[in-house]
Length: 345
Image 1 (tube, one colour):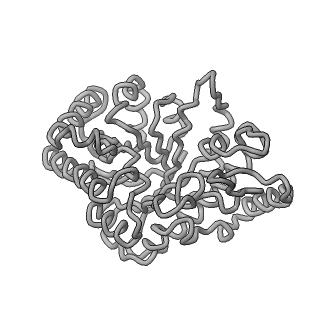
Image 2 (cartoon, helix red, strand yellow; image 1 turned 135 degrees about the vertical axis):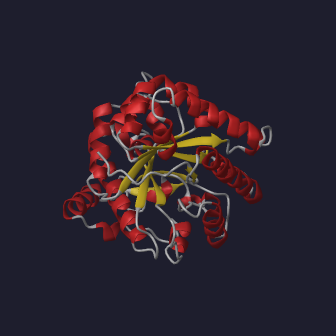
């Protein structure tokens, strides 16, 4: 079970990547819009190494980029590189797994900021399932289907998560941190077409949790077995509530128990795709969110729901333009202010 973070009281924050090319402008946008729960954005438009999976691949045994794809070079000494990951994990050697500007310009920029007044600072790492399903070996087999590689990936991500937590904790004004594991491939849970073993998922999660001392969350933008995901007891569960709230609330009892245990839910109520966002106004999105709140408050006390909620855009905001992204971010912050005023925060 992860360490639970203080109640977020229906504040707003963002998710993952932004379309900005300038890390200074990206961090400025985050801090001006989400001062109490800021997050460290990734900036994939700057280059492939800042995109999901690639951004956490610097220590991947045998990892190489060919024709825009991350794969494994069998000519490398995989045994020695894997052994080093195991050794780092056992010794807690997170220093070898530090981020650099080439892979995380937004993170490097945020390290120099003064975040006095923020409640919790959040960042994101690629989850081992998503990493292992997107990267293939020389036989084009997903790494996650190689038992040893699956084990290596969870420990490699654990070390990266541990370094990120330590680095965030050193930023001026930061008192609490949250590392969010980005797992869109959790959509494969229960799938007969692209199966993922739940015990391997749980073991990988435990590897990461063992390396993180403060908040550890999960973001999944696809529909999945939410009861299983909630059973992992992340500090935060972030998801696309704009399109999947109905499916999510089919697990209403598990969701209620999660909130009662101190968990926080990030309700992605603002669509990040601008073509969709431009068809709805902020009042409609506020009404949609309050509809979710009304249903959940049939199961848990309204004060508990409000205390354990965050309001966010959905993921995918990086595919738009900078001004579009900032408008979407500002809408989530507006909804948060309106909700907080309505419920009395």
